[in-house]
Length: 198
Image 1 (cartoon, one colour):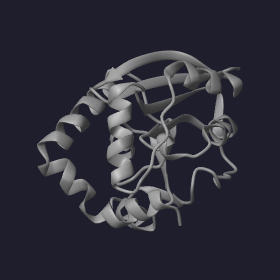
Image 2 (cartoon, one colour):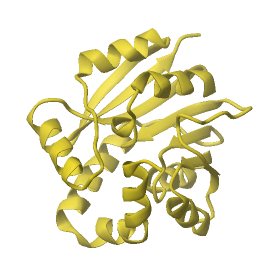
Image 3 (tube, helix red, strand yellow):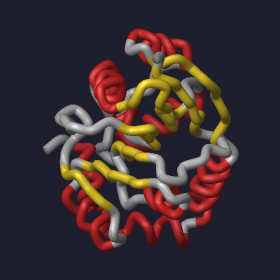
């Protein structure tokens, strides 16, 4: 098991408590949720794949909006929490994901920066996304905030890799995912919406 997944397994039990009681963490999640909701996407009866779902923060938002959600995570502890929340789950890494279905929407809200090879992640998205489907990616901005984010996660022994917006868009384009919109999601992250070419 990689260091990232050891980290998330170790912190799974307290992850929701941190969001509830830590003012800094709560503010970050508030800003991210606000940016996500501003997308004004109708999820009613849509299929959603949540990659690196964690404890299901975004999976629950989608489920409450009427979507059929599959939450994917490699951390067994996170999967246990997702199942306690009555979410449909798949215990696997993004790299090993191989499903027989495709989805209207795919989310990666804080997972792609922990992938050693982003191309594999985008390839999995392309494979599992319906034509004209949307990929919603929350990803740290490069520059000072990205550097600080990486530094903190390195200190936690959970290294991340952050590339520039231009590099990110190029990797997406190489996988026939075209940038539809791009929003700020607080001081750390950007929210990217990519559409799969028909």
